[in-house]
Length: 359
Ligand SMILES: [Zn+2]
Ligand SMILES: [Zn+2]
Image (cartoon, rainbow, N blue to C red; front, side):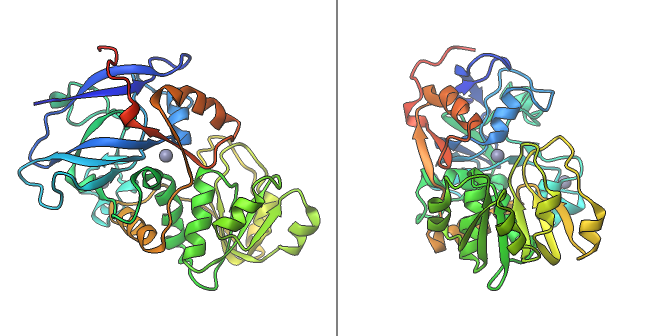
């Protein structure tokens, strides 16, 4: 039987999100049906709702930071049982055959992984939805291979944003082998940045936060940063030159990076995580002088996401969150545009209106 879902959806790029009712596919043998309890609000939700990247089809239910409880499992599902605490992140399937998929890096799937929302739904024949629909809803049905286990030690609400903000920062920290003795800088203390600080500190790195103002200094130190620099402070920047092995750059707005590249030590890397579609000038002279790199990184694979969740449980790490009801999503978007969130909004699905509008 298809599963009724109540949701908050965008109906076009201009108007506020509002209630919507639709159906999830009848779970197949490999599927896990999930009662969603919490869903984080990611900046990319806002970009897709506003059609900033082009190609958005409406109605659109955003949300790829999903935490909930298993409601039903298909006949082939052995790793999950009804009642288990689970999560779903940015991916709901991939080709499973290309080299990245076989290497457990489904996020780099060559034909492209299936995004959790706003992506052609490969189960369209059974779901009745041309496009995938995300987590601002009461239920979702996902193939078991893309379902994560949320350890008991993690609260479901504060764990939800780990499924995007957590893995997006964890993957580069692991790829560039951050550990005891590493010096890591984090540019921007928002949803991604605050997780980068917590995870890098827990991995044993000495963490510095670079910010445009002093506002979040106390938060940064509480999260595990050893130092806090204001990037307009020329003297402080000069003193920090050539000191970092890895700079996690979480800023998505256009900004200057040529000067900040100078903060990298020899063989250091600045990794870009912000969804920036505009150019950022980098000067080769500043790179070649110390064999520096500027790189990008996209979320993380399924196995790596599970590794991150287990690490967070072991180290008592979760996101700093602000809980909201679905009817506060539009207000939350407005506040996010002003960077007025500490540090992630999480939607409480138990407060979804009982009578969502019919399709
Ligand atoms: Zn996201
Ligand atoms: Zn693939």
